[in-house]
Image (cartoon, rainbow, N blue to C red):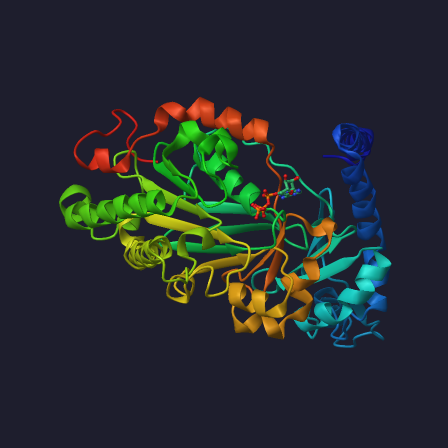
Length: 460
Ligand SMILES: Nc1ncnc2c1ncn2[C@@H]1O[C@H](COP(=O)(O)OP(=O)(O)OP(=O)(O)O)[C@@H](O)[C@H]1O
């Protein structure tokens, strides 16, 4: 190719570069037009972060200086008889990739020699100021990289809403709780979990969170639900009225009815334990996963204290209630201690998770515990364990403000300390819709053991 021909290609190349630029700008504009107000602000923020990064990184000491002559300088020196010219040290700036969402930006940055995770963490408060964010966290992002999460608004203070998709979940054991204080998703695995203990002052979102879980799992025939609601006498007057169609069993605040349901569940647990090997070919249902013929059975015990409270008195009626409460505790203990491998999950919700509300021999074997707002640190300790005393900034006692309705505190696997989660609100109309659309999937799991499986809907 002659020089003349090469020169002729320049306008073509310039045109291609311009066209690529134009496409990039158009895509950005399209996204901008379609985005909501908060995301638009984040889009501008992402541009500012990218363009200001080289300067900011220098000022924060996040750059490295390379004093070794470059490869080309050394080659040049070889040509000039081994003499390397006065060499300018090079300042290395970490490469970054910036993504945005409604709450702010996420920056993935490379580590450099002597600039690692600890340096980024030390710089986090200054990055927050420079990017005008309320919170910045820095976490490792694989070898030699960090993930910087910067949020402009406190995600815990912004109520969110969840509209159930009505789609069959890919994995029924994934419990998507909501967003943490950095607007990252908090997902808890329910596989191999026999019990969840949920506490919190009245009106702070326990029932709404349970409704969300039921709505998300209801489209799967591999999950069946039963509810004991200690706050209502009949199903129609309680918080679970909209879900009735999708429940294979429901009892209100009557202790004897609760006793009957818990007894039924223990019988199911025993029958499953006796037949699991023969039916599933494994000793632990989670080794093959729940399916329509062997569904995960979720028993919700809301206002759990109703069923376990100690009744004191010598009159026959009180004595009977005391006996029923003791029996209820024994039955639920059986489910929580032995139900895991056969696919039974008990969710216990109460206002204060002290020993008089949920017996400690039940509460303390629930692997997942969470708490919405609490009045006292003792109530927080009862719900989350002694360690919460060491994390005062995450204490549920600090959530006693209407702003934090729907915010829960929990220990999340793989994370240090406690995580605060903004759980989304699920409107009653959505709950009713999902329950009525999926009512045809409701089966009594005991009936399935004797051969009444839903045909054609095996496995989740
Ligand atoms: N995640 C949420 N986000 C915003 N608001 C919420 C959320 N959850 C609940 N709420 C509001 O709080 C009200 C009470 O919620 P919910 O019934 O779930 O509380 P609760 O803790 O179960 O109370 P109780 O102990 O009395 O049953 C709801 O009607 C709704 O207005």
